[in-house]
Image (cartoon, rainbow, N blue to C red; front, side):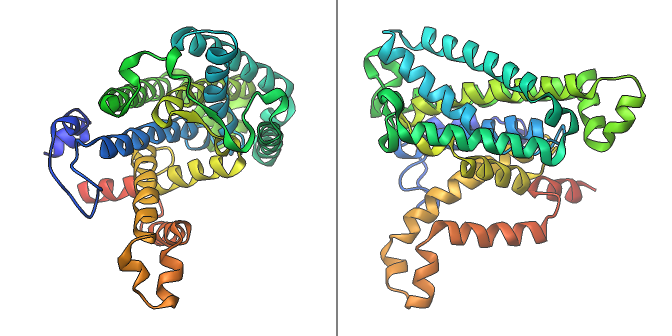
Length: 335
């Protein structure tokens, strides 16, 4: 069992399992609602991995990861709607334009990227705020404003549309996570990845050894942004729409919490943190409106009806219990 879980084999069996787990899911494991939740967990596990490439692997604190996710979702939907493209060409155009924008933003931000630390964090925060305001103001009807954009089902292959095809969306999300994991793990194990780790630990020493920290940090930034763009495309299909919430700095903060919760800079930590955070968020939301909570005394019912309050408390407990993240607990047990 341990070998299957550690290898990710459990993900291949979920669509074929009819087990009913009332406290964990609203229906059987292979029901449409459960598979939808699993797909969302897988997408955020991949997004957390892409963010960890910056934060955990290279030591760059970014507050602007979310706009790339929003760009992937909104850009693909706009290309399908306004340019009359089908899904694959629209996604390809969005990824190409978005990656070029990431290169340009990195080049323009040469000084803060070279310095790292607070300079980089502030530039990415400004980028996130500007992007979020642009999305909310809905210039020319491009972003849908507060309502967002609905998925153009006519431009998407039928196997990804409808409740009956939720299992296919699940496989798509699992494929996204597998691709991100393969790319991130391969990159971090390469000589470039070793330089990223050295930059995180001691950037000045990297410069003394003749390596260019800026170019390596720019490479990490572009790769992480491209993976986030792709995640935005998958998120569009999983949720059947592009929402303005994905463009905010708060959305990036959620990714930061996922990475820290699971274990920054670890192999499985961001995956665990991303999936667990999303599952808890959805289950606590259901718990908050349940009759069980409504029947409690007001001092207990009030905080339990707010998922973010419960999530925050659980996060604080997790940080104290496992300062290195949940992934560190497994390493300690193996020792």
